[in-house]
Length: 373
Image (cartoon, rainbow, N blue to C red; front, side, top):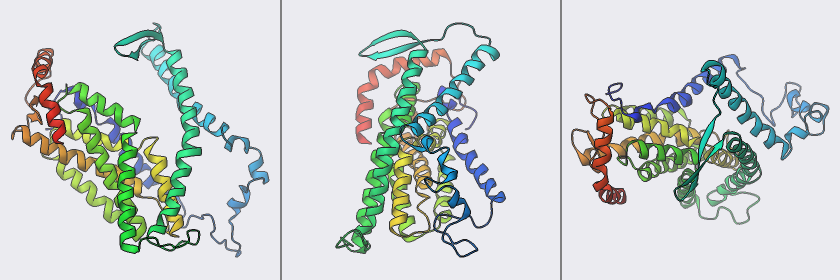
């Protein structure tokens, strides 16, 4: 049904390409890299314990002195925050003024809550965004990321002996691994609930579908997928399982579930994988993976995030298909009876008003449908 449904929800899908295509470029980059990449602690050909690259970046050395201040808090977070926002804003203003030739002042409607709003110039909200990004970066690097690495480093004590944890393993191997897996699931689930990008996606889907796909349904289905993916990633690191045998079946299942799904559901599901790689989930999951790999002396602790990205696609598609078929076997009704357009229908203002009118008496029914989920 792809390409036949002009519903506004079919505007989703851009995040999918923005997430998958960089993977291909990074894989292409490996063709130009040496087969053996030196890492910290690797022996050099002369028999030493450090590579020449490491000697250049020893703290306090000549190679590090010039830019040492830029690697310290809060300068590092300030530089990265400005670098992330200022070029983007400058490009958008250039596009607006030069390409689109719009010379009007940029005004935005700032929502103050409780039905109140005020018109403001764009400079004040952008300043708030810049300050917020910098403060957020400080909290991530000095708080969340370090906490995740500490927890990941101590987690193996539940099922394996660690010198720094007296009495480890605390629970035995089988019980300890089970506890660690449950912890990873709860961690991934909770981190997703706090992800601002997911809240934005879910709110937009709820608004554009006029409640047919509720915000709660989107958030819970994505959070369940991220939790499951984080748990699988933890097992990958513990059992030293290669990534490909785990990631390929996941994407194959997602592709299979996409075939019977409506275009709207496919767009939302695949975009949900992109929004989970946000500023809360990424540093937390990567830090835990690196800490876990260090604690187990594993080859690496990466791969958890990739599984935490594919599993939400599967969970959103699976739950969406169940809710879709529950409402109508033809797939034209999603869950609680709120109509999404079929492949032969046009999205017009008349149909939009009809949907809006039909939804008013069904809100109570929608809440009960959400509770079932």
